[in-house]
Image 1: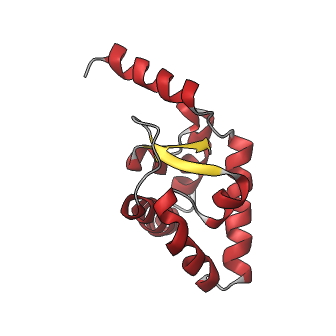
Image 2 (image 1 turned 45 degrees about the vertical axis):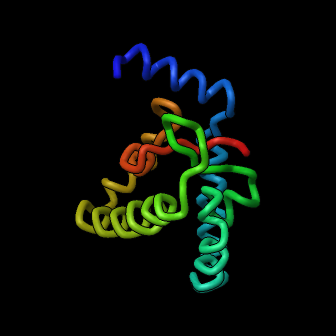
Length: 132
């Protein structure tokens, strides 16, 4: 696929759906963190298991955000959402974050200020975060 085709597809997705700002994404992270802490993770996992199929975490559901495929703009499937949230964000961020003394996690977070507000884990999962 040529770069012009990719750019046109990105532009179509973004005009159809509005991207969530870095501040909105930070808010979702904070709310998810609070929910994980308050429920000892168990309540969050139960809630998330019901809504991952819609491309949402509990905080994203509250805020009206959806994790979508970067190419089509459609919400991701349950399995891809679980991969993104549980493996890429939780396992990779904590393991690589510990090994690199937090540098990996910092780079992941700071990438939200770049192209289409995509973090490193978004790029790895080929996702964007949009408003419902």
